[in-house]
Amino acid sequence: MNTPQPQPATEPNSAAILIVSTRAAAGVYDDLTGPRIEEWLVNRGWSVPEHLVVPDGPEVTTALTALIAAQPNLVLTSGGTGIHPGDRTPDQTRAVLDYEIPGLAEELRRRGALKVTSAILSRGVAGVAGSTIVINLPGSTGGVKDGLGLLDEVLDHMVDQLKGGDHAR
Image (cartoon, rainbow, N blue to C red; front, side, top):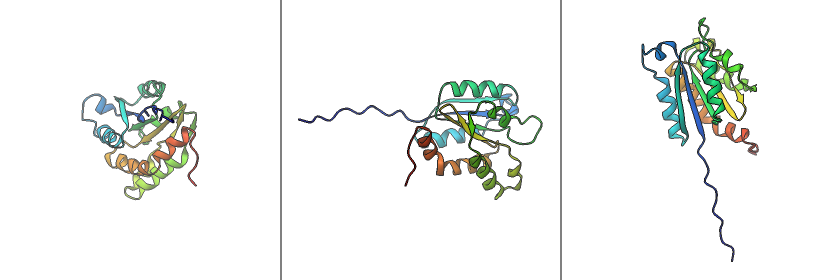
């Protein structure tokens, strides 16, 4: 008799959210992008154990390093991607990446610029650190909405590829 063997439970994908905003970290105003990102991830069935808000500056590197050490499938940042002197999220992200995914960041800018020309000023990057995909989204709610729209189209494939999956034929 061939008895079916129990299958191991598959863990849901996990993500961490890092909001980079000096004013939101200081309580000057509420973080509006983090809850939108979290809702989008939860609606996709992802677990979101970490949602941090930090000011622009060296705390970004510290937070990114700690989040990546927990080995989530994905870290999404929002904020600090522009050309303001305090916007250093892309630089600090590059410092922790093993390699970049330039096409994703380029497409985020391209799609954003179709709606708001200033989206071309975003310096956000995307890449991989260990087994974690890291993506910088803009700090605006519209930029986050556009970024999540693009991720709707490619995130599952990216995660599958990083786990060693084959290309669809």
